[in-house]
Length: 281
Ligand SMILES: Nc1ncnc2c1ncn2[C@@H]1O[C@H](COP(=O)(O)OP(=O)(O)OP(=O)(O)O)[C@@H](O)[C@H]1O
Image (cartoon, rainbow, N blue to C red; front, side, top):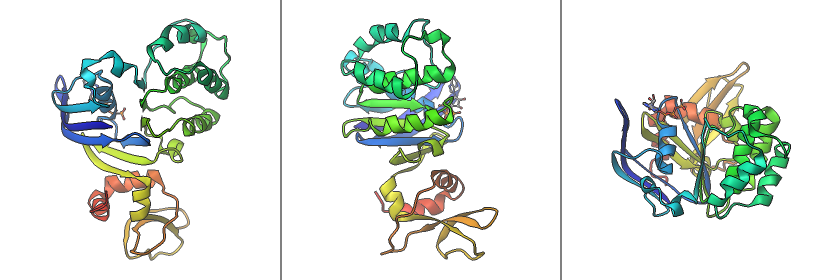
């Protein structure tokens, strides 16, 4: 369990969080969404113990990340948006770095690389950005840490690699792992994430799982001008209108959730969305 209470954090002259409180539980893949500069990477870095809170409590599996205890560091991994690899072979990289992670699984790592179509003998400094990113993702997953943070993992991946990424990720989520993925590419992760967290201006704007969203909101499309009475959000398409409405009591809702539309609705119709979720937890 990850528990953040009244977190305050500021860079030299830029306050990012005043009093942020949120919990993340194992057994979920969280999609962390939000506008540019709203604090997503800062939150991930704070959970990793790479940034130290000015006030409040950050508790990751009972550890204070700022203390950077070895037992904590071997159970967390972050795929950062910008990363550095030394000019060594993949084998050498694994030999040097895997020992820091007791649950690292070599077999799994080489299997992921195979899925990502990365040739085994290549040197890291002779790889493209996308190839290096795939090595990093494979390494991160093979570490089998209880907390896995990913900052824009699909950036730089080609279309086929994105679907390989989804396939690989679908196989790693277990009851004891907490995976948090910060992204602007919600469509890349639509089938993967089961919990949506939206940050706005350093505050939690939305934090609900897919099942709750399905219970409360229905996503539809209409060729008619008139939309259902309880429509909360709509947007025009060429031939009709896409809309989000409240699910009526007793109404069966098995429709697909459009995460990009949900994100826009939370941004543009926040109070109405929050009202729909009032009392849902
Ligand atoms: N090293 C830094 N020094 C000073 N200010 C910083 C630093 N890093 C980030 N910031 C500021 O902190 C705020 C939050 O940045 P952060 O990178 O956490 O946002 P983000 O939500 O991850 O953005 P993006 O979606 O663009 O990646 C921004 O206003 C940014 O300008």
